[in-house]
Length: 158
Image (cartoon, rainbow, N blue to C red; front, side):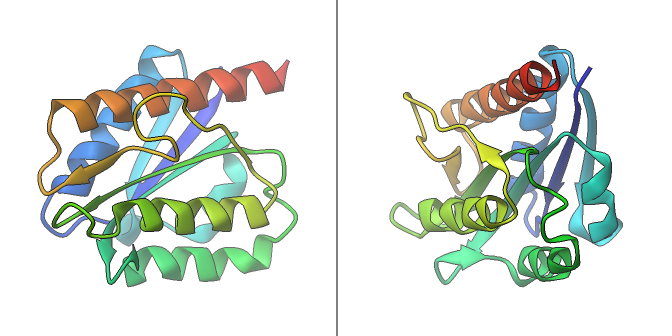
């Protein structure tokens, strides 16, 4: 059974709702899931999991400062996260509000750590995004992200 960590920041509850859907998808795929708000998380926990999924609202086209702080603190584990499976999701206030660039920034950090990130041929190619409160399309893509990451982590563990 793969161990999946979801770390998110949420001010309005939208990103938290997405994180919950990601967790549901990973659990349905058979993973053990831990879901943390960044306020209840330390970067050292990254080492304990097979897969890492990051979620953030979008501020000025990038992740929230709280998520960036997690990434900055993770530098002390550089090289020790290689081979873990990664993924990301984000929300923004409007269409074209930068959610996709936020997902890419989170994925970039995971790639620099050596994580394995699987894209999607349908829906949000880099990761799920929502405009405002997530609708059913966004939540479905979140569940699929969780399941996809959990399945890949399980396959790689064999």
